[in-house]
Length: 149
View 1: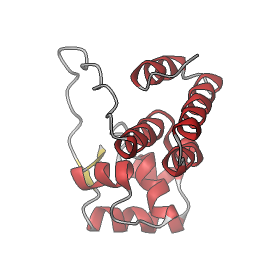
View 2: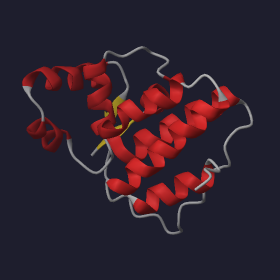
View 3: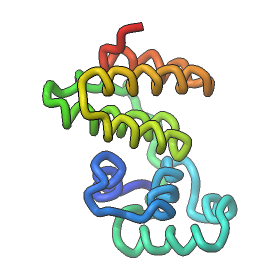
View 4: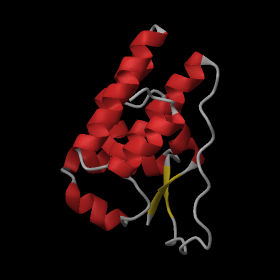
């Protein structure tokens, strides 16, 4: 199974390494549930080259399938008080919930300049998650980021 490395998770959350959009899209497809062969079957050759690059540069790695966790995953921490950190955490949560479909929402959240813009972007992301049938993610997102419904 392909897994994001710490470097890959950091890139998804903060865009620290400045990957091109094609590479970032491939990175977002990696969910730890599919093998390298399964992912390659889903993508055109150009994206397969990006996967090669991500593997080579240490953003992703082939890992053995992880055993099912014994206990439920703990609730995510509350959002940071720092507005920048809150935007980054929210953008990361959107990409984790929606994958490549959430890229435009994550960008909208990251680019919000005022508290009002951020609340609007968070509420819109919540609505999109619900519309895409991810109501469990939407509810957790609303609670974590204290979205006024």
